[in-house]
Image (cartoon, rainbow over all chains, first blue to last red; front, top):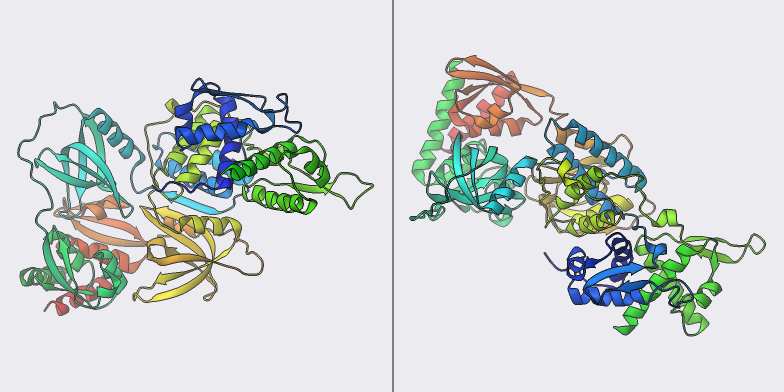
Length: 307
Length: 316
């Protein structure tokens, strides 16, 4: 992520927030304090030095804040006036309220006790911070899925999962050594070594139906077959609903009406996508897959006519 | 650099002085007692005006009032501790833990910075977060959409916004709205508000907004209707239509997982499913090829037959 731009105002805000934080974290290590505020150690020393010059009118040692940080541990005294944390601004409140809504939706069904506490918090926040924006967040991925994967990643342990493959319309059990989590265009994936296929695979987190850690002695897989080396290309013509086509096939809007070429790892996916476009997309090439689309559509039509 | 530090010191000292005072301070008292006000009378006045604006921008409310009822014309200033400080009443370790989880959900996403500073303030209240009270969940909000903060600020300040939106026919339209709400479902983000030209409440997908979002200056601020709840549809409350679909045994997992009811018919299972939008359900059933057949309602059946005929026609 980009480093936030440092302005006099953002520094002032940080200094104001530093005082109550120090008041409740006396003796905190300088390095961990810098991390907590997302700045370098030397920036934190500069901040503390500035703060040292501030206090109540009079500005004698009796009125100035008393900071000590030479030892690498930071303490503050004589700072009662600023010792309450500042009220949240709208953006902070909205961030927490959206996050809380997501947490509520992610809690397991048997924790209605926690759900009640979180709902009460939302109510208190909306009233006290005066943010009356309408917010809602419904998670794509079960809350426990990410926590389980994170735990497997840190322990370098295998996961056993029940996975729904959308392309092949099957649900199967897989054993996977997780390598990393990735997010692409808002969709989260697990990238891992699939034991049954002896190859690396991408799994969409929202298609994982069940998940648990299993202990299997980690054996190196000698022959690694990498997925995605065999992309094929396909050509389509868009007859109607161009935005749907652009979104489904990730096309540049300018190319939609030019019989664009698309590439995919899976002819199964292309066939299903063309069918699911209900005649708004025509598959031009390859011709055998084009014939297959027509055949499937005719078969389904005969199913309707038989009833 | 030195002058910047001086300015920051002055802002902090002003905040402390105005917070500590039990009565209103006049400008002259501030200039006399608060460190950092130097130069001619005019310079000090200018400094003070700018400092007040800066503190206001930091969300610090300066109370302006009369400190002496006899001399009503002289304005005084103070910051009320109750408006400065975060007041959430009594807060428990479990509540702090829930709020931490809420803030953590933004890691790497649009409101990461705001969530982080909110969390710092919460941690400054001196209540230990009781993470052990929570089950192991780590929900995530994933958006890096550029205009996200602009939208959030516009909603909280009740300001109109304008943006270019990609229509279903891929044309771009300039839309001006009064933003009411922002929401996410299944990794997609939605913005709802009153479209000024259409004079109606509409929902927009953030990924269909093309380019920058502009703040539109207008006279006065709008109000969000109290009963506004377009996001009920996000929670399935508006999916009132029911379709009956035959799905092949062991197949059509996506439809199967959304089934309201299931009747075993031998080679097939018959399910019922809730839906909102006809095109959506037709596309979804078509995705499953010969493994799913719509039984009813009649209108939906006719719709899918028409689509199938169209597929055959263009691929003939």
